[in-house]
Amino acid sequence: MTSSEFGRVEVRGQSIAYRRVGAGPALVLLHGFLCDSRAWQPQLDGLSDALTVIAWDAPGAGVSSDPPQPFAAADWARCLADFLSAIHVESGNVLGLSWGGLIAQEFYRLYPRRVQRLVLAGTYAGWRGSLPAAECQKRLERCMREASLSSEEVARRWVPEFFTEVASEELLAEMSAIVSAFHPEGFRQMAKSLAEEDTTDLLPTIEVPTLLLWGDDDRRSPIGIATQFHDAIPNAELAVLAHAGHVSNMEQPEGFNAEVHRFCGVGAVP
Image (cartoon, rainbow, N blue to C red):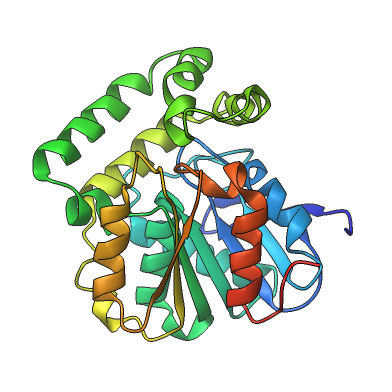
């Protein structure tokens, strides 16, 4: 593996940090809320043999700046477009997990010609589009309330929900270190964007090859939501990873990477 480049660009008044490694077609990785580009380390390591792997810290996460208020999913998508232009990536494969999958959908809505293939992992058509109204409100209220807690308490409450009950202590510790660096304001605004968005009208219009990649024990975005996407997106394919929770790329990285390798047309993992 080639060592990754850590860079920073200024776009739309935002200071955006990112990691980039490899050569070949671009694969743009969009993390979930409470996370940042470090959550993609297994993919930066395991996919860069055949792809240029790019993982940003979205505005409001990692070492990027916080976005202004209000900031909707479409604002993140426009920021992503300018970020990719700034690093000279005009099109590529786009992979979004959880909240990142919502941004991937909005990016496709606004810039369909910039997306060659789309991978949606453990995501939603917005909470409003995938969950009952009461559950959507419950989730939003929890996020607004818990964004004010200490970083240690947020990690303690949230990290176990991202994985299966048999996740290793090492994996839990790795994710806790990532979550402990969350941005309270970024967390609030990302949660609001999930609660406010409904992309169900977009799904039938997606024309690029689409892979739905889900953990079989995802307690945040259950497999029924994957079925919603599979039924709505023309010719989408669904791959379910065994023994994987919500953040399947970290819990089952070999299986996750193999599916992405195959789907992006670059063969199996060596």
